[in-house]
Every structure is written in C-alpha cells, then in structure tokens.
Length: 133
Image 1 (cartoon, rainbow, N blue to C red):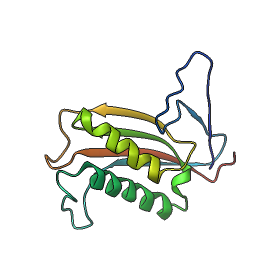
Image 2: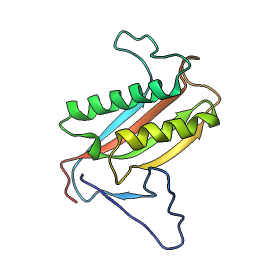
Image 3: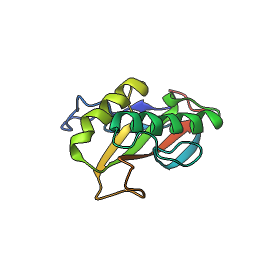
C-alpha cells in the first residue's frame, strides 16, 4: 500500500472500516469517477439489494485499479453515496470484507437520489499507485 493511516489526538478513531486520514508520500494518483451498480451492458445489477450492488460497485473499482497496474490496497480515499441511511451498515460490511486495512479515508453521503432510480449506492475512489509505505 502506498499510503499510511494518520491518527491525531482529539480526533475520534471510529470503529468503522475507514481511516480518518491517509498520507501518500509518492506515487501516481488514479481518480475513479463514481461507480454505479451497472453490468457491462449497462443494466442495473440486483435492483433493491444494497449488498449485491455494493459488491458490484467495489468490483468495478477493483477492475479499474487493476487496469492501471494497482490493487485495492492502493485505494486511499472513497466517497460513498447512498439513497437510504439504513443501508449504511450493509455498505460498511461489504467494504470491510473487500477493502484491506488500513481502510481508506471515507466520506458517506445520504443523497436524495442517484442517476438511476434503481441505484442504491455509488462510490468514487482515489488510488495512489507505485508509492511506498
């Protein structure tokens, strides 16, 4: 992983699978647009199933990072958009299972809607490739 988690006195260290901040000393940055639960043909994967949709979205991110020569361990920041606050625990469980620790710095936003009514989650990511810890 080309980044390390940074902690600071007086800042809550959440038990959620995330880092409050990450430091990237060197490397190439990969900025990944918001990924949605769409199959390669554009259809929505698993309408109504937040777990399956989150798995697809993180699978898309994994594929893009690997296409650039990295791994999910290189993802240092994500922004999660969900349409229902009650889905956040399920999203966090998938993240904990799929993304390695130390977890990326994370922001979660409950949005009034996404680009398609069937989408329950969208995640954008930043990865740093080729850095050193």
